[in-house]
Length: 345
Ligand code: SAH
Image (cartoon, rainbow, N blue to C red; front, side, top):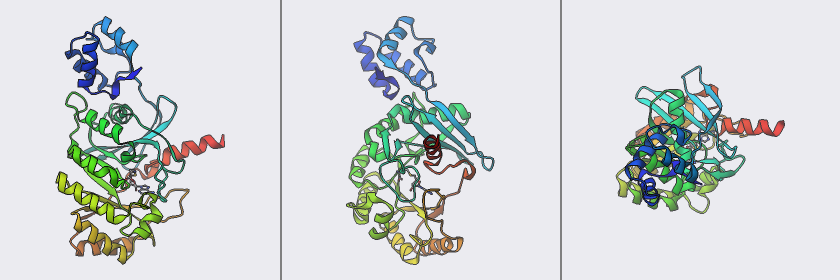
């Protein structure tokens, strides 16, 4: 059966034509799907005969909440969803003064192997379907009652390793008859799969590209991020430059501050040079401790000195606020806990 929630209204309309149904019904059905219905039966303004046809042709799945944690500190909500095949992914809803941001996963697990990250510890299980990524946004909004204004693809997985499904998700969530979230309110974060940058730029979608840089030199970066091996920082910077030139959208560099690993004066100077060469904004991230990892966050003193070097070099730099510290809100940590729990039983 076809997964109707991964289809755009025009694709549904094309199918409906073949089924001998009027095209306008497609829009009606699409709107229902974006209200979070779990069956065709609930689509009360669709004739019964069509509902029966749809029932036979298409599937609708609604993710179940396995676990929901609400931070006592800042209200950050973390969901663990059960997918149709029993796999689980995480979504985080964060509230800021300017609105609510949802952080979605794009894969079950991850195969990029970053040394500081919890999501990659068990490897990649599978890619998420477009509808499953959409459901993270939709059901976070419906369950929390918070209108989602911004989306960051910064949860579990590497979005560019699931390129087609992620692009389809972006089109679904952006559709005026769907959740209608503007591309300028969406950020896609990547570990730097440079071979996909041009393809993304070609789509000219106006989203924000965040590059998880974490180190400005090949030696440090290849140690932290296997995805750097065989690609390299230079190729990454050229790809960023081409992306910026083509789309006119400023890239943001994510940079986790790790004690003694990537937080020295040398790193700050080289990072400044790269940021300036591609007009990137730098977002420093205080590292979250991951139980299985030996790294420690940079000290406040080192962080201050690092920021000063960037600022003195005219780089636009911000420090990410830490939210949801009491709900394992750093990618992959909640799913990891549950997986580990399974192993012990
Ligand atoms: N694969 C994509 C998106 C998922 S990671 C990427 O690499 O960008 C989302 C962000 O969280 C990345 O910047 C990632 O490097 C960061 N991150 C991973 N582990 C972290 C940790 N322990 N502490 C803080 N940030 C972490």
